[in-house]
Image 1: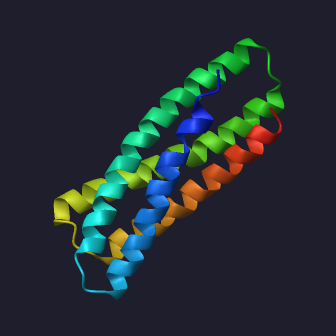
Image 2: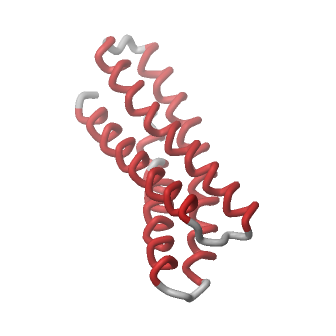
Image 3: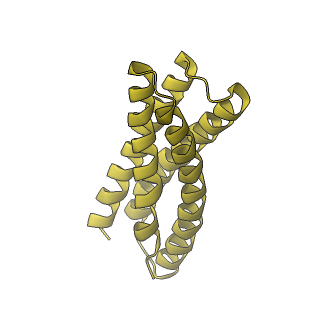
Length: 132
């Protein structure tokens, strides 16, 4: 049962939207954007942890069915990008907590690097689904 592809849309959407809100917060004074980005990042981390767990369940099921080495290699690339995005957004969430969610260059860098990694993981995951 492939549940992972159903779950990954949530952290991707939450994180990419949080990056947009960080960009808006950088250009506008309204604290609403920073607060929204804070919650979107945190909820995205929770969603990513669930997606990672479901990804392992799905991968183990695929491996027991005897998938080829090419699929496993593609999965490693996809999961590496996803783990990196989760790590960066985890750091983003902690940075926000420690600094009172103040906008800074470090926070914007974490947001945009995380958004890039999340988009890359999503692209690689979609590509992976096309060969399954």
